Amino acid sequence: MKFFAAAMAAILAGCAAPSGDPAAHVHQPGPAVADHAAVAPSDDPRVMVRFPEMMRTHTLANMRDHLLALAEIQDHLARGAFDKASDIAEQRLGMSSLSLHGAHDVAKFMPQGMQAAGTAMHRSASQFAIVAKDASVTGDLKGSLAALARVTQTCVACHAAYRIQ
Image 1 (cartoon, helix red, strand yellow):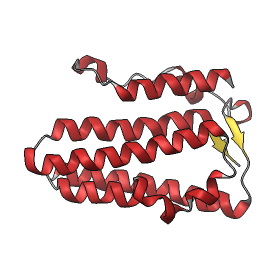
Image 2 (spheres, one colour):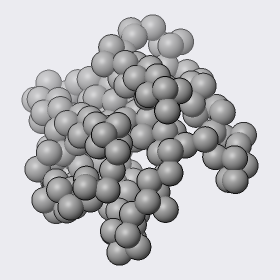
Image 3 (spheres, rainbow, N blue to C red):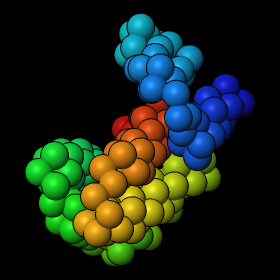
């Protein structure tokens, strides 16, 4: 468990202070991600989180919608539609989306670290929404992309540490 906490802390720490060095943004998965990619399912070192079947199905559907929302956000950013990207982030991923996803009910089945990772994702999505709204005035795509990367990094951290059954 200490390994997962350390891996998640390292990934989330990387979210907080993006480097200005373009070379630092080349995809090089951290140890938790790299180790997981080479692990057979039966030897999967991630923490198993058991959900009742209905809650498991609901949570997986929410995560698929999160991926769809991320794709829609990227599409809107590419077209310069910052306000639309912001709205999607806040409504479907941000703190405003918690009741939509039934987060309170799902959290009961999550270990503390998984809850923290989920909260970090929702908060970073709300932070992205603010940055994207600002970009609709400033045109700052770079800041929006950095904020969106932090959202995605929180997802990666959680998926590297936990799996649901």
